[in-house]
Image (spheres, one colour):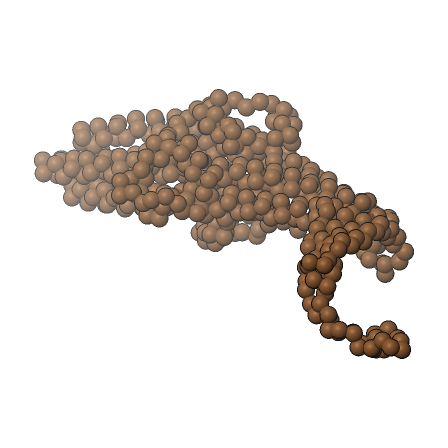
Length: 497
């Protein structure tokens, strides 16, 4: 439970910024949260107790699109073999967060074309045929002797094309440039979404590996407890052990059975989480084929990692484009005060009917000079300036957040590596202690209290080692995400190179 709660908190911290960035791409303020679970709890107000944190995590995770997926493919009755590489490929294709980011990019492309329409030619055609009757006195005030004042009815045909073209409109030009910067930001947001998808898939895959290790450990502990129970029973039959020893070993066996059931249930549920994140068919059974033993990772220097992150992180580059877009939007607002030049042309055929029609043309060049627009331009400038200030502030916050995330990842990496070393040594010592305790009990030197305590100590050491190994691997993939290379180098980081 504690391992899964920690994993959920790390995922929430890593994904919160991605969700907000996707939803706020077109100007809404975003307040990304840090990866650090404690800092995340402070930002969201989440309680730090395991039970309360677990309840809040479940609620948050259920609302996070990066933990959802779009199921596709056919359900197979045979469990499929799923490697980490296959899981990442499926996630990049079918994870809901990635799919929604692509949809946002499509919307940005549409807005780009809307902005360009102000600069591109607009051509429409109009054709009509009608019957007219005119009263000269009513229409023109004419009364000509010998000429009837009612003319018609007569037919009228007109078919023409209208062309409207902006010759010079600096506001529209700056607006189109601003929309291009927004499109560039949206494309980078898609890349950032893919980074987040890799983080989610790898973290959940690692958690499946950890849960499988817990099942194996629980199975081994159950088998050991079963052997101990049989040994106590045999010794009681031989008169070398008491009934209390048998009861104590039986209670230990049942406790290990319960832990094994709990571990198996946790593994099954974690597989469902992974299957949903990568969009497997509903109900598809699978087994993982990739394992992540301890591999030491020697990263570059901290300063080098931070500098590379500013260049490689797509979310940071996206914010740079959003700042540029806001600057251009402000210039476009200023340009509303400038004169604009346009051209309008229409050419068509007019006549009583199509057979007797002849060509007509109208052409004009228009000069529009704004004089007073009721303060609208001033208002647009203020709005654009506020947007630019907001984007610049978010950029500086992102710069500081990247620095913090990388420093956190380096600290977590060093700490987790030390924990793995300590817990590995603890397993060796606990194993030796259990073997010696069993020998003492077998020889009748002591009762099985010592053996039960030694077995509990070994179980605790195994669980701690599994958690420390998961934390170390998660720290490596978090470092890859923090430096902006999760998609391209996740396998390399987990392999320790």
